[in-house]
Image (cartoon, rainbow, N blue to C red; front, side, top):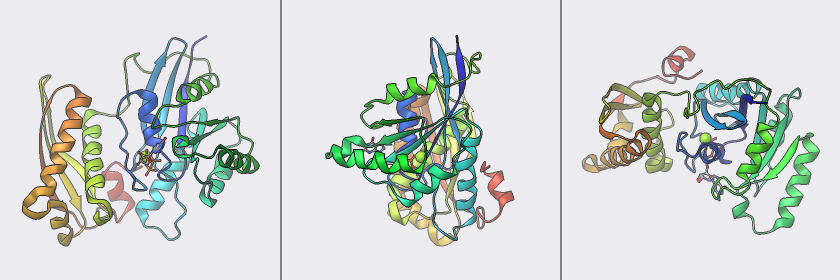
Length: 293
Ligand SMILES: Nc1nc2c(ncn2[C@@H]2O[C@H](COP(=O)(O)OP(=O)(O)OP(=O)(O)O)[C@@H](O)[C@H]2O)c(=O)[nH]1
Ligand SMILES: [Mg+2]
């Protein structure tokens, strides 16, 4: 019997949701960084096996910071909605600490479908006794269908997690072609990879309200020609992204191009600009125009 369905990956910011999605699919589809709230959009990663097709849904990290900006609230909405839209939910936590935010998420997740707990970053936990104590605490919050210690970084027990999810999917035909990887366009993936480099290179200086917009995307089989703009909210943020003598934006473009060539399997010509667009994150309507749900 063939099974097919959605598996939502949810959890607080920075626990490794996107790293796990990439590990499951075997491709870098979803961007990652050590900054919280790296992921801003839901993305499907498709895994096809002889007996099942799993549609993994990565989502923004749920965060409990009070009085957040509109963008925070929109991201939180997506973070929980994704669990409502899935057949199976994987809640991911960091094996080094179970926090009040984890507790809150565990209680907010739906009760009418299987929720598995994956305890991630076990490669960074030396004391297995502490891991057991964390699992005990988590189990007191809710009745998880399974608890699986994993490492998205090394791949430890990720295959087991995948099998446990597949077994819980409803019977049904595949929804994507057997060689499909994602529901997202190359255009979207390109914008995201550029945003990853921006996040990684700017660290704490990064203006929170920044995003990437693809202005031109010409694809021929051998060469993708991409023009993209990094949008910032204020004129004063422009030099931060440019760097002295434009060095920083040049580095961002080079790193993004290398990753894009790997992902798309073609040569990429990438031209990157910075643009000031005041208030782009200021209204629901404007956020929707930039692809936020
Ligand atoms: N040691 C260790 N680090 C990990 C593991 N998985 C992820 N990380 C690191 O944790 C950080 C956050 O990873 P992400 O995959 O971006 O986390 P996320 O949950 O998607 O974060 P948001 O999208 O911001 O909610 C990155 O620096 C990863 O390299 C793991 O298994 N072990
Ligand atoms: Mg993420």
